[in-house]
Image 1 (cartoon, rainbow, N blue to C red):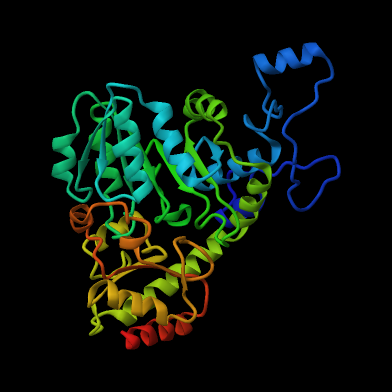
Image 2 (cartoon, rainbow, N blue to C red):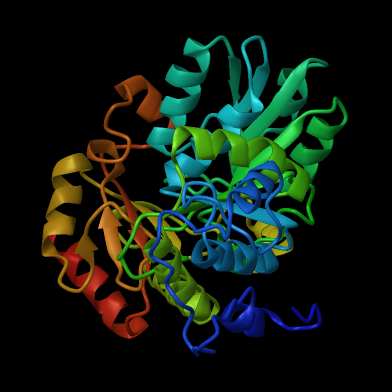
Length: 393
């Protein structure tokens, strides 16, 4: 690939592999295995597969490799491994690196399933996990020890939209030799430069902005070639969390338009956040791209834009939040985000419902909190829809 290509060109052409038919659209290689010319060729490939050689779809596939190469070019990573879901990426990145006795420091504000992996699974196998307020650099400094193996955080927390200082936390971790792993979903690969800011490993739920059209589950782990091929690949190919070829093809189609979609979504989110400021029926409106956000200066420096998601707290608790949700016309009630369609979620009763009430309060997940993922619909229509639903409250 020409390294001088700009982002949108990489997103359309990066990593393309054409068959002997020279197809325009990427080919889907729907095969679980591959044929060898002879037994010696099979032996040789199992000993060391070449750059364009494949063994089994759980290990790799030409369509999947195209997606991995393209997303790596977008992220600025050396390599990538595509997974069956976003949580397969999170758990695979962490489990492949850690062992009993290791110490992890993590931001406290995380997606419910990420919390489960850290609180329940890793600790079950002897990994010590310390949670901190991710926005407090002093807390990170205090918690990171000389024997800390890894730090983990969401660059923008789900669903409260706290923003972590990526460069500062990375510097603290690297000072003791710890690796930095981030879930970068809310920042998106369009607005984030996490690796340039010091991150070692980036994970995405490709289900979100990368597909962006509600079609398929997927994930990806990005890092150095050495880490991806010597640490992640052995773990993933033996535990079975690889992406399917058809899903990889869907994700390739999503990458072609992600830059266009995400920028339009962020523009809509900014307009909606501005329109909702000071609304009488809202306790707060949280959007990283608005000057009222606690880390707005950091967001501007770190991302340039505020992303595609807004958090708003409706006065009157769960009953009022449900009235708001049920009055929406364009915006859908679902638990995904990053979709071309706008989606509203009530985290306290869905994505974070397993948390105790005290834990929810600690994270700021109140009964009135709504997570609004802004799609690509007309922003004036969306503003009218949200304001109309607030009238129903």
